[in-house]
Every structure is written in C-alpha cells, then in structure tokens.
Length: 168
Image 1 (spheres, helix red, strand yellow):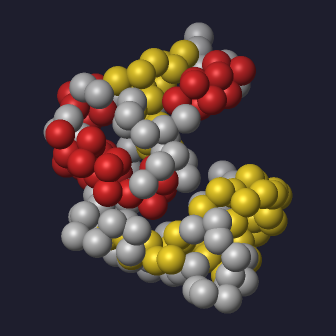
Image 2 (tube, rainbow, N blue to C red; image 1 turned 180 degrees about the vertical axis):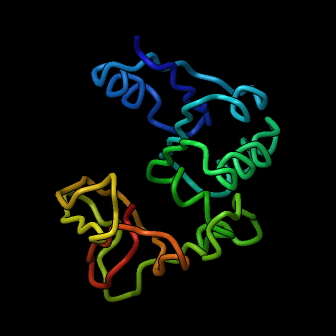
C-alpha cells in the first residue's frame, strides 16, 4: 500500500514537480496547509522555490512554523527541499528580520562576492560517510544563498560552488 505524503502548499514552491516525483516513487502525495495534518502526518515534505521572507510569512500565516519545528524536534520524517531546507535555519541574509523555523542553529548566507550567483546548473553533492539515507551524486541548483556549516550531531552533504556549503 502506498504511503500518504503531506506536501505543504507553501505558495512559493514547485509543488507540481514534487507531487509528480513522489507519485512516480509510489507515494500518495497530497497538498495541505492544515497545521494539524503537518503536526501528525507520518511523512511531510516542505518544498521550496522562491524567497525566504515570503515563505516564512506564508507559513506563519497558516500557523505552520510551530508544527514544523515540533515534528523535526521529535525526529518525525520530514523532507525539506531547496528553500524548504533553508527555512529550517534561524534566519537568512536574503530577508533580514525574517526568522526561520530554527531547528538548525545556523544562518543562511549569500555566496561570497567571488562566486557567480545564482549558482545555476548541475553540481556534485558529496555525502558524509556517516549518512545512512543519502548517497553522493549530482543535483541541480539554482541558488544565491547557502548554509555554510552543519550543526553538531547532524550528518550532511557538501557541495562546492566557490566555497563548500551544506547542500543536504
């Protein structure tokens, strides 16, 4: 039986692509902005394309910031993609004053001036050898901001675009 997957309809994301890939993988994805569904669903995806500030405003207006924080603190299955991943941080230079979900005690910063931005195209992703669910490979990027450090106790993947940054 296919697993139901709650995909948060952030209003700024590529939800059609996320829904399609989850269906191809055998899941039963559905869009939601219901805080209780986000709090209790077995599987949740936080997608993202867009800017940090408007995404935070939207999630806050729907009462989704606390349920997302709670489920991640409880180690419940939550996949955060692209901007969705950056939203897990404390803040972003992209939107000064906007507070992220805050489960990752780090900030999202702009790539340094020596790096071409946005990073646009395929790039190598190198998984930490301790990572149990991700493998090294390639991913497509379209970003001008990044996380520079992995929080203590977390495993991550690293990508280089002028500088090393956390990509997963």
